[in-house]
Image 1 (tube, one colour):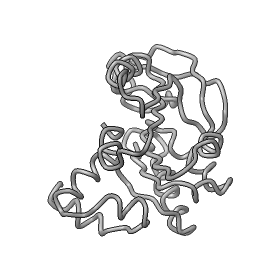
Image 2 (cartoon, rainbow, N blue to C red; image 1 turned 180 degrees about the horizontal axis):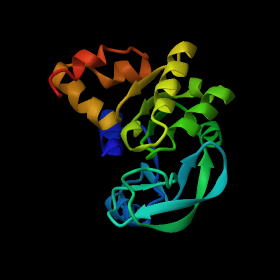
Image 3 (cartoon, rainbow, N blue to C red; image 1 turned 90 degrees about the vertical axis):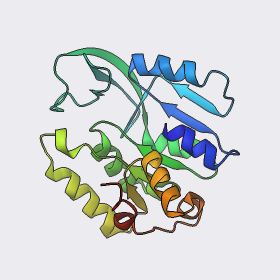
Image 4 (cartoon, helix red, strand yellow; image 1 turned 30 degrees about the horizontal axis):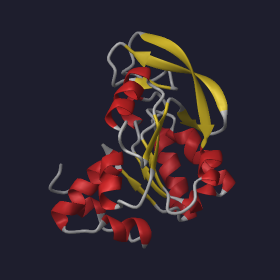
Length: 192
């Protein structure tokens, strides 16, 4: 869904979608088969280029590189190729929207972005999964680091922020291109 909103807002942009869950990957390939602006890859995003075990839960929505997520239940293990976030950002030219919905891998990815300086290349949306991870305090620490470093990021997915912004008459172009951060607390006050 995030891809749809980004392309709707910016028809001149292209999207690279990484989806390691085999079931969801097939659905995305089918959905975007006629869309030239979208490349769907059966890969994961990680802190570095690697082969990793990916855990696919019995229910398709709960899959992750992190087996310790509390909502996983019994899982099937599959090996996936992972793109390092710095590698990915170094090959993409132009405006970059990085929507992280990595089911628990956000902390390692954001640490790499900060250490490498690659966080300066993208507008970053982070959907954390604090409530289903055993080390929940690491999420608070991650956001504190980002704030201290002055990193431009928004908590939430692009799709959810897009819907709320439209209701408030805020342009996502202003947010993405001009790096303006509206008061997201106010923006979501009606959303709950």
